[in-house]
Image 1 (cartoon, rainbow, N blue to C red):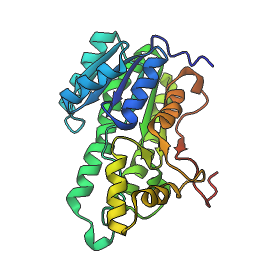
Image 2: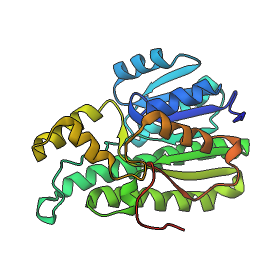
Image 3: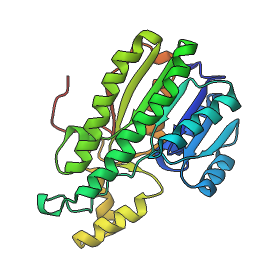
Image 4: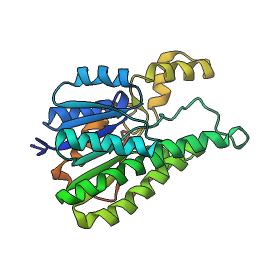
Length: 262
């Protein structure tokens, strides 16, 4: 299937690694021009070299609104516009971190909201006028399956907040030809996975292989998906082929055993 992404102009935040990097790779492979955004200029340059194609590395901190607007302006100047925004800049959930009420720290939540929720909002706010002017756009917010389960209070708060932001943006921007969706990955294999597996193994006194199996058993398919598999879902949603989907949350974690979502 031709996703009709050739010549589209995209911004991917968190594009130097993990799901963001995989999304940038996938969009580039489909013929899109992609600006990757992250705080670390060196990591961005390395990622750009690995991705190839018509890519642009734009160092920016999503917690700084002025920097966000400057990143969008630079992309528009370089590419001649922006059609797609994939928000993926956030710290991944840490399954080894304490989640009991007594262990929760206010500043940890403030950081989560500032980066994942307000950071996503800032980029959406900056790109929306450019998309509306062109009469077409796609905003895909990468969130997480903690929106649908307990066990990580701050993880749930941030991911539910992103879903709420997504629906509000979809309703407002839909008449301008802009679709907005949220993707909920589960635990995903990225560059951080070996350290995460080691942390779980150490905390539980089990082997690394047992820890990896434990982390994967939370999905219907019994294993963690790779970042590339999640990127496939995001890339479809970023394409003209996804015209029928907006305002909705799409799980991409290999299935959640038990609950029925409808």
